[in-house]
Length: 270
Image (tube, rainbow, N blue to C red; front, side):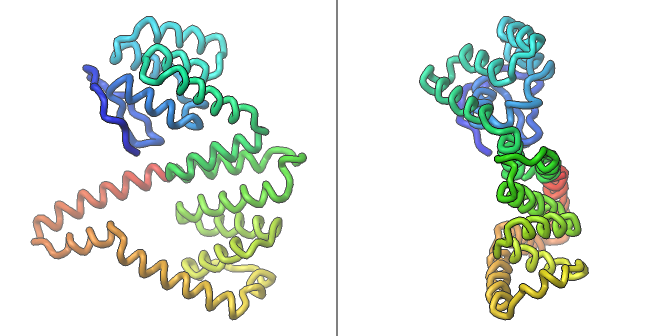
């Protein structure tokens, strides 16, 4: 993600936001994160670490104290953060009201819808392990008018995608199979086909294999070939090829940096 260019405050120990993979160096940057990531800050965000940062590093002792008192009384996180947004004067009153409305709309959702929205947000941020846990939690909710088969099908589909991104292919297959049973959408069937193509050791149910018609196979194989071609042109692949054209010392140094980056990205996923 990117932040607006703004004045930096004399912060000695920046506030790290793991989901976004960034360090916060100013009150304005913190305001920007809060405003643009409501689903991130509505849970597990406001705590003693945050208020300590606001007090010690941003030199906003009075605001931190008010936030702590609200936290002790069980006030919702977004209401506590609205206080911080108002005190910083980074956003206009009109913008803050718009933020309030957006947060209220999330709070008014059915628990299953809110849980899925939160999981979808984590998935978009490549927090696949956390997203999968959220999807699993949603699926544990009792069935009702909102938690119908169509909704569960979407959750299972997204759960399968989260597991696939973590290379947990058997769990991905199980989720996709349940998604297909609930909706019988061709898009889900295609995902199962691609998953099996990538991990041929998976045992696909005969009832599903029988639905891989020759016409579908041909169409999906063409899509797979195009995806492979696109991957060949990917920026990271080009960077890897350029790396191996360098002399041995530069190659080793560059490889170490690249592997370190990949490890960091994988740790974020799980």
